[in-house]
Length: 362
Picture 1: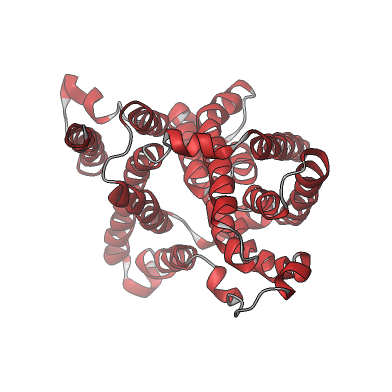
Picture 2 (picture 1 turned 90 degrees about the vertical axis):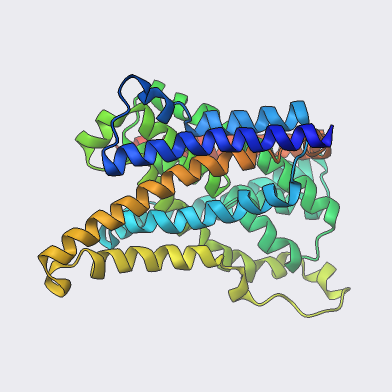
C-alpha cells in the first residue's frame, strides 16, 4: 500500500511538473507545441490543489516529510521570485492603499474572534486566539508566530491550523468565481483576496487563477490580480510583528504562571518577506535601471526578471499540489465543529466587510 502510494505520488508530481515546465518554456522561449499546446496549460492553480486534495483523501500520505517541506519552502522561494517581476513604486502604491483598512480589519477580527469563539461558542482561549490571529493576518504564519508566544498546546496549534487550512482550500476554489460573477477589476480582486483569504499560498493561488480567467483584463488594466494580491498580503504579513508585541498583553495572566524566555519579536517576521522586498528593490533599481547599467544591460535584466517571475508563478502552482496533498482525513477530523464554526463566522464576516469596503472605494 505504501509503495503504491509513493509511486502514484511520484507519477503525479512528474506529470504536473512536466506540464508546468512546458508552459514556462512556451512563455519564455517561444516553444511552439502546435495542437499539443493544451499539455502546457491544463494545470491551473485550482486544478493543482484539487489533485493534491483528491490524492490525500483517496490514497493518504506519501513522503510526508518531503511533501511538508515542499509545500512550505517552494512557496516561499516562489514568492521571492515574484519580486523580480514587481516595481517598488507600484508595490508601495498597492500596499498603502489598504493600510487604513488593514489596521481596522486586524484588530476588528481579533475582537470578533473573541466574541464568536469565547462568548458565543465557548472555544478555549488559546485555540480561539490562534484562529483569530490566522484570520486577521496571514493564516499559518501568524499562528506559527503567535503559538510559542502564548505557550500554546500542540492540540490548539493543530486545530487552529486545520481550520485555516480547510478554509484556505475552499477560498481558493470559490473566490475567483465570486470575483468573476461580481465583475471585479484586477485591483479590486487582488485587494479582496489579500484581505479576506488567510494564507499567502491561497492568496497567491486565487490571484493567479483570476489572472488566468481574465488575461484580457490583465492586458487592458495594466496590472494583475496576482501582483496586487501578493504585494498587499505580504504588506499585511508585516503586522505579525505588531501582533507579537500585543499578544503577551492579552495573555499576561497565563504567561505569568509559566517560565521561560519569550520569543524575540523580530524573529516573528518571516524571512521570505524580507527577501521578497529585496528582490523588488534589486529589480527596480539595478536590473531594470538603464541609467545605472546602460540600456543594453537593462534590457537583458528586464528579460531575466520577467523569466524569473514567470518561473515563480509556475512553481507556485506546483506548490499548491503539495499543499493539497497535506490535507488528510486526520487533519479534517482534528478540526472539530466549534473551532470550525468560529473560523467560518470570522471568514464570512471579514470577506463581506472587505468586499463592501472595496466596492465603496470604487
